[in-house]
Length: 98
Image (tube, rainbow, N blue to C red; front, side, top):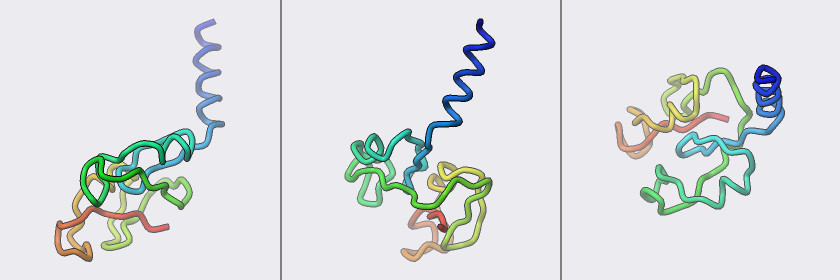
């Protein structure tokens, strides 16, 4: 019975859509749940704005639109400063290319 429960959980999780915040990379099950919460990595400051939906699809690698560096998750990308950010070296975070 436990194995059935595990398999069912995996199937349900894989069927549900995933939505990611462009600023922090957090995953949500719906756009509504994402845009209703403040983002701790919002460009205006922690919790000073809502999450922004990433408009690209899920990928195995994400490329920064400023420097070309690749990451395996949006969360990894959004958490690191970019040396070629338009505001100056390390003055902004990486941003995913669509």
